[in-house]
Length: 340
Image 1 (cartoon, rainbow, N blue to C red):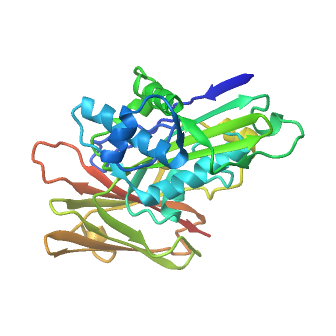
Image 2: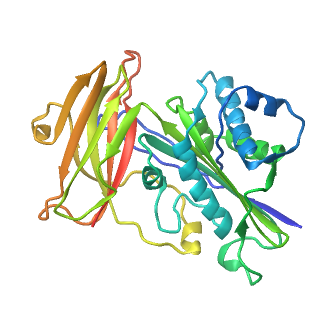
């Protein structure tokens, strides 16, 4: 019996408009569930096989155990992030690849936005397989792997994934830093099992979320020459710092070989513009108001045919926390839009 695990650290770094903030992200394991009595009961059980739903809850219990041990607040389950994570873990389990990109060439930000996400997401991921069929294009005949929604997952498997992440050592500790990021408030777990004969694959992703308000975009795709609007409401105590626009190439379908060769991901290198509230350049584009103790904003982007070209555009929303002791800004949301 062959049993292999595939683990890769997927890192990302980014500077705020004030060049003070950096983040690290990872990719190797995910699960979702809600902390509380049911999860505490799962933690106390002897080793046993769990349903996929209970295995997700157990993973969140372990995540919160590790966060509490490091003096951090617990995260709660996020249905939207779970939905996005499940779509990705389903595909990885069926096709046998491990990547932050999916078969359409879409990265976590775009997949999370497409699922209805209104915050900011950072991804961990994991893939393992057992039996005689491993992955992807190297497999012979015998049919395709099929998802098994009724599969059981052992507690030891979930513990092994989380332990592998949290025991990482610098500088290769992207998963650990993602789990222990103090700015995370929620997490969505994607957990999938696919089988073919006596072979099985298990894919897991953790989609950590910043939930500090609600930011939405008017469209997922527009044509050059059209306009789109990003608007949102920030939690009390937060003040809008800036709205940044970046450009990347449009996503393209990827082969399994190309997916396996991917590694880190992050924001595009090409920054198009930054709007600061009250700055002359933002007067016609960005408006900010107050409503019941919350800042609300609306930012309009006109895709001028003379200046814009097709691509995947990222809009990052940054805020200043009310804590006077904090020296860095907070990324509230990342929205993506395809301009064609």
